[in-house]
Amino acid sequence: MQARTWRRRWLAQESVLGYGLVAPLVVWLAVVLFYPLMSTIWLSFFDRRLASPMVKFVGFGNYVKYLTDPTLGFWAALGRSGVWTVATVALQIAIAMGVAVLLNQRFRGSYFLRSAILMPWVIPVVVVAVMARWMLHTAGVINYLLQSRGLSPAPVVFFSTENAFATVLGVFTWREFPFVAIVLLASLKNVPEEILDAAVVDGATAWQRFWRVTLPTIRPSVALMALLSTFWAFNQFPTIWLTTEGGPADVTTTLPVLVYRTAFRSMRLGEGAALSVVMFACLAAFLVIYFRLSRMLAEE
Amino acid sequence: MRDASLPKPGAVGSRLLVYGMALIVAVVALFPFYWLVLSSFRDDADLLRAAPNLAPVGLTLGQYERLLQATPFLKYFRNSVLVSLAATFLSTLMAVFGAYSLARLRYPGRKALSQLILLSYMFPGVLLLIPLYVFLSRFGLLNTPEGLVLVYVTWCAPLATWIMIAFFESIPRGLEEAAMVDGATRVGALFRVILPLAKPGIATAVIFGLVSSWNEYPIASVLLLSDAVKTLPVGVGGWVTLYTVEWGMVLSGAVGAVAPVGLAFALLGRYFLSGLAAGAIKG
Image (cartoon, each protein chain N blue to C red):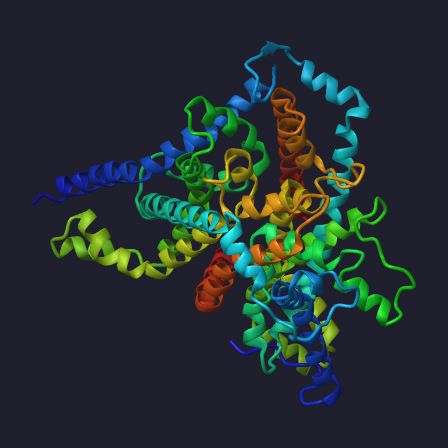
């Protein structure tokens, strides 16, 4: 066969096959993901209620309502989302880094621990919520331990208006850090031994080796995990909802919780849609800033 | 690749520190599980006692009897199994072929398509709840397992595609060409050469799909409203109201919800880890 026709047939075959194989996936995503997302924007211009046929066009009314009326709780929720995200990501990275370094050491049971530690991350959120509410109950096992060891004079009310935010933050961090730790562990194993050994020969302490050799090498992984964790934290809904439903008195109502509650408890789909769009805009803005920043840092 | 050496190899102090830290980490991560399971084997009177007993004594199967006989738990369980299997099967199928196309074939728009698909992985779940509710109710798919599977496939497919792309990229290029030179068609090369090599990747994608579908709560809570079709997370979630909670039922239900995942993880944990590690290195 002529080389040219063979090559042409090959390329044509490749394109047809390529489009054909990826078509089901693309079509499915287009219909069940992208189309609904577009329709959210459309929906946000209406006053539409759950379980009611009434639909009324309001233009930007929903947006104006939530952005200008502080009693509706949008700005408070946004602020809480911000604090929530920053706090949990910082905690997750710090704890995961320590755990990864620990798991990187050689000791009996380290392999078992590497698998076991993922348990909080793989289980349904419902179970996490049940665990949290059961253990942190005023008459629960944690309070029992605190009191019997004399660490606290009175039972700690973990879900009070003062403590609930920190409590749920802790629960979420407990659930999420194992994944970050495992990823960081994998990248720790890629740190070249020769450089570490050379540093030992040069008399560097463990801390110096960590700070000057290990950390810079794994920086891309840390940056990636920080970005992913930020997304997951900002978007997080089930953990908060199943433990506190955003309460008490709205103290744990972050933006996703507000969206869900507006749409499915207050029955206002149109307003919920508008809040979703605003939430998405915040995420997009964050992404833009992040990429601008990382490009600037890369040019240093 | 050997593990990092300790600051002073062999020093008793630092060995103790490592084991101490490891113990703390293990307790923090695993004690809640122990406590959950232990509590589920206690009867109602024991559960309400002020001073809980940390040791595994006074165990009874009473809560589980009640769970299986007097609640829709088994129905929830069955629904979760069916939905997870169906969603995972469909999404893995599309992901494997789609990822092969995106990773190994060349055609215009390929780069953009793969970025688009990966982008959908980053989407906040909450954003989808409202439009999906409207969308499915328009087609009469609300409160049906079919509607849920429809959504779950969209939920699982991007991640499965990402995993498969990473695996396909790690298979040496030129294997297909070699097979084709030997007379196979492209499709034949795909089925006979590439797919068998990608089995670990497919296993990882399947595991992630099953676990994600099994665990999912927000979408199911919005789309499923009656006991006959509810999945486990929604069913058990419904028992945990903010007010008086029937703890015996909830605890045993939670253990029932977590047992399959825990079991699968104990048996197949290495696939999880290798899948994650592969993803991390590519990332």
